[in-house]
Image (cartoon, rainbow, N blue to C red; front, side, top):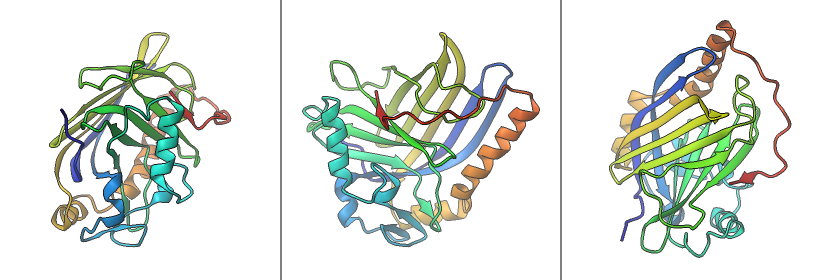
Length: 257
């Protein structure tokens, strides 16, 4: 029997390694929160607001259908559509960047969906691009068995993220999660060849005012810096003459597996 991931704050790093046509690597410090959906209505943490202003804030309109509506209903609908509602019938935990001073850009957030015994059964990866578009990838075993830290999941890439990669190929996801650590790997392959490796890792501590105050002192401009760093890295790739791909229309379906 497992245990759903608890309310926490993580500090760590994101690593991007481009393999082709030129090598390119960068590492940035990050911080994130993990919040079970069931605690949103009663969550009371200094410096953190839920659907209200504060130094940090979580907003329903930043996730799910992006309409500010019931996230539990949206999540249940997605799981039901993919035949996962009977097994992922326990706690759903969101891992994301919260807003800082009202601003955030989340390249990817994760919904970790557990069964009633606390075992991880599905992950929803909410991806945003810099054009204001979004797409959700549903990651689970075909037979819906629990997800282990060594499991690798492959999903087709259908959504434009970077102008330096085409909308083709596959992502390979891996999730190594515990109450004290989070490690998510997202590797992009095309024609069986690795194109990009991404690692998001962090050590976790209880979510509280002290942890958030420490975040604000260590990373006071992190959420603003995410968008800035995306453009800085894009400029570096352009200077390396990496081929540029025009943005296609987004997929008609906003959710895929």
